[in-house]
Image (cartoon, rainbow, N blue to C red; front, side, top):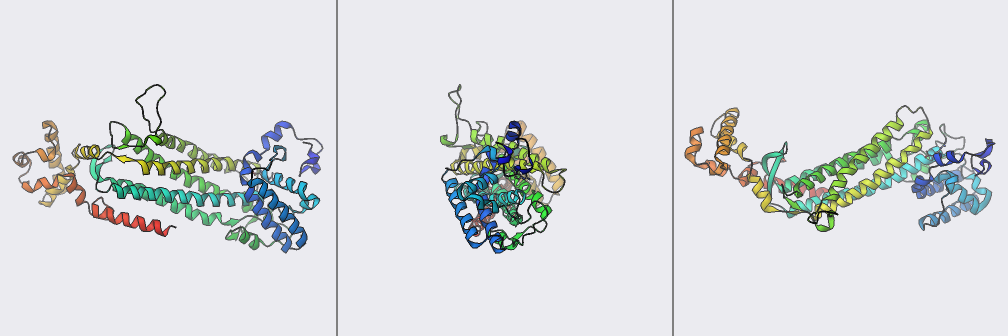
Length: 463
Ligand code: ARG
C-alpha cells in the first residue's frame, strides 16, 4: 500500500517496506478489541459533539456508520486488512468508505495512544468479569464436592509423607480458600481498571474542550485518568491482571498435581471420568489425567506472559512507545489459557470420584496418629517434648514389629511409659484424631461443617 493512502501518510515520500508492514502490524491480534474500539469511538463522538466540534447531524452520521460496522464485526463479515496496520485504522478506514470524508473528523482530539489504552481497559474489564464467574463456578464445585464427600478421611501430607488424618472435605476447602483469594484479587483489580485514558490524546491532552468525565462515564469507567502522560503509557492494569492470572494458575497447577498423584495406582485415591482422560497410542491399558497435566503445563506460559510484559515495560521512557504494542498477545493468551483451565478444573472437581477404601487404608498407614499418642501423654501430665520422644520410640518399636499403633498390647505400651492406660486406644483411631482437631480452621467435622456454611454464604453474597 502506498503511504499516501495510509492514514498517517502525509509526510512520507516512500512506501513502507513490505517487511516493515508485516513487522509492525497488529491487526492480526488487536482485532480482538474491535467492539471495544467501536464503543470508545461512539463515546468520543459524544464528547466531540458536546464540545461543539461536531454538529449533531455529523455526530449522528458518524455514529450510524459505526453501528453498521459494529454489526458487520459481530456477524463476522468485517474484513480486517493488514496493510491498515491496526484495528483502530481498520475501523476508521471502513467508516470513510461508508460515509466519506466526514469520517476524517472522528480522530479529532484523540490519538491511537489514548484509544488503545482505553480499548484494552474495556476489554480486560469484561474478561475479568467473566473470569470471576468461572472462579465462582470452581469455588461452588469445590464446596459441592466437599459436601458430597463429607466424612471421608484421607492422610494429610507434609513433605509428601503421611502426616495426620484429615477430612477430604477439609482438603478440598483448602482449594476453595485459594480460589476465593484469587477472586478477591481480580475483583479489586476492577477498581484500578476503571480509569479512562480517553482524552489524553497522544500524550499531553488536547486543545478541544473534551469532557473527560462524560466519556469515562459513557464507557462505564469510574473516572478519567488524572495524568495524560501516565494514561497513555501505563500498563499496570495489564500486569496486575497477568500476575493475578499467574497466581490463579499456580493454584490450578497445585490442584492438578494432586489429582494426578491421587489418580496414580500408588495413591489410588480418586478416579476421574473417562470423558476427562485420554489414552495412549501404544499402551492399551492407559487412562491418563492429561487435562490436569496440561493445566500444570500451561501454568508455565502464563508465568512467561507476566515476565514478558514486565520486561517490555522496564526502561520505557514516558510516554507511549511502540514497544507497548507487545502488551496484547501475552494478555490475550493468558485470558484464553486461564479461562479454559478454569472451565476444565470445574469439570474435574465435579467429576472426581473418591476411592473411600484406599483413602481410609492410607490414612491408617504411616503412623498418622503418632501425634495423638504424644498428645495423650501430655494429657497425662508429660511435657510435650518428652511425650514426643516417647511416642517416637513407640513408633520405632511398632515399625520393627510390623504393628499399627492400636495393635500394640497395653503391656508393651507400658514398657515405654507408665502413664499409658487402656484409654490410649481411643486416641489412636483416625476418627478420634480428626475429631479432636477442633481449633478454628481445623479438620474436626463440626469445624468443617462451619467452613462449608461460611463458603456457601460467601458464594451467595458473591452473586
Ligand atoms: N497498535 C498500536 C498499539 O497497539 C496502537 C497505538 C499506535 N500508536 C502509535 N503512535 N503508533 O500500541
